[in-house]
Length: 418
Image 1 (tube, rainbow, N blue to C red):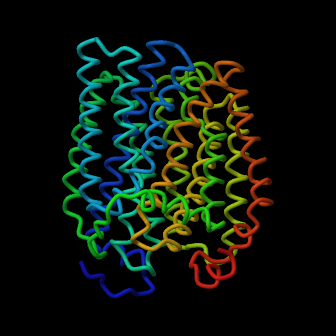
Image 2: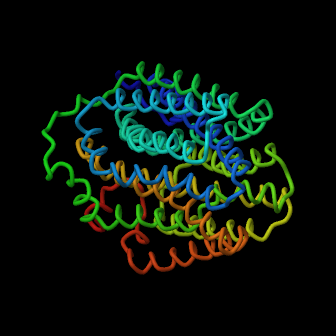
Image 3: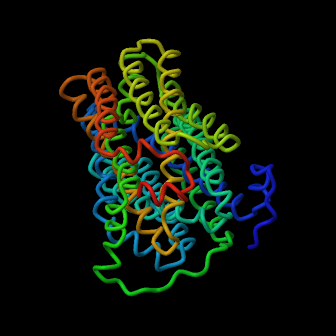
């Protein structure tokens, strides 16, 4: 699909790319359904077992596939049609949600059954996430890429706002209702991704060898900017993960119900969506590295504020800031990765990036649940926030190239800092 002429009015130009609009809808649908499902799963498991550790295990079983399959996912994305991979992932997630609905209705959904189904969802997401990110350069021109990444982030955050709140409300009709709707939404996403047309040439079908499988790791390791950006996110989110603790804060600290949990789950997305919309219209042009470190520090500070809050309003505000700073980091990191990686290597590099980002989120949930089981939810959150700030200070020392980045576009930065 040919790209229309670009003008200074670039956000509207994105809307003229039909395949990008379809992609935006796919991201909205699949992320929204996953967030709805997560609210239902979190509340149902906590009702079933009352264990903070079990909430952490929900994150762990979805983390394992990201690491276990990382060396396979990347070469697969670079070898096969990325749309077919994304479509298959939607169908697997639909099958998992259908199993949750059937198990809930049949009354046989135990904790172990939950974890087994969520592991299947984690396998699908380990392919889905890097594939969706790797699709973007094939939808728009290089000049529009940073804004497209920011606009794509609004898709995810729009879903995260609507998904948890809707999931919390629909839970009043029963968790099976939530899972059933997720099945339909995943199915719709599978159809839409099939309609996308790519500008990029078909992937070259290179044989699977040790060299091709591990090429992405070598590429990232040889570029301090990419390694620093990815690892910063890994440790920040690992320490700052809050999702697994939200049912505990909602029920035991803020004394609210499923609707309140839905609001807490949506609050980060409100902040993230606001920031992503702003970045889609006002991308960072200078001092990108310092902005990344400041945003990550504010991310940690917002966690500390949330951990100490006993007010639902203050908690929501802290989580909104948490989401806004996370969105800033995401847009900068993904722009750095995608503007510094050739298309034939992009799948493998994005698989590593997703292993860092996706696994850090789910493993962070396990960390939070485990620490909360030992020291309480407040202590687990506060320590995580302070730890995130400490990571920022350390990474400024370990990766000075990252701190010195001025612009997103590689150009001089590639020569001077990579």
